Image 1 (cartoon, rainbow, N blue to C red):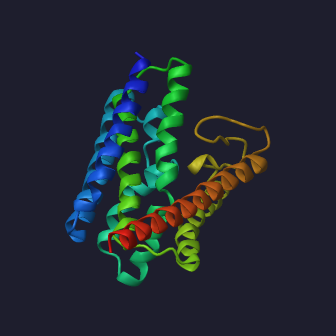
Image 2 (image 1 turned 90 degrees about the horizontal axis):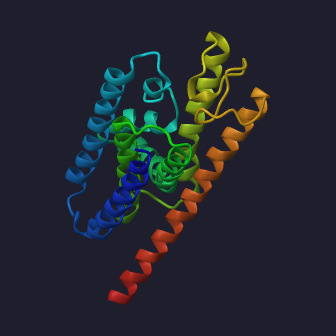
Length: 238
């Protein structure tokens, strides 16, 4: 049944392209943001509940759905904050969502390929998780297209610092309570997406933050590309 992972990712990529092409018709920013946030949060809760019913609390398939597991579930859980945050703070949160737009596409693709290669059993909760990645990516693109985020370096540095700060907080909690949130334990229980790349936990943490930084930088250049692409189209239309 592992071939279902490939089917899932092709369907979701088709969804991404279809929504992207229709995005210019999303004229009401308030309603569109509510729809994006509601779909992501509702799907996330469904994913957690299904995983719990299917495998129970102690299984890693369930624990990886929790907000403290990694960047993606954390963002799925807190995304409704965008709707209620003060405008002065909302722009930084919006920048963070946009910075993660590329990473949110790459993550399910890589995960699906990995699950297919190792012939891993298909889980519905995985499919919902991949769906949420695609929707959050689309929301990031929409925030750029609708002018709700800025390409200013300052705004994006603050936006990126939010998720880096969350990961650093997880490390502190892990050190104090001997936990392994975000896979960043410094007490030997370290992994990145359930794969132990190196035996040294400090080096593992360095690899994690380097990867996160690269994703954010790529996301920023994607913002620039999309911004100037839209600007060029607007100028040609005028």
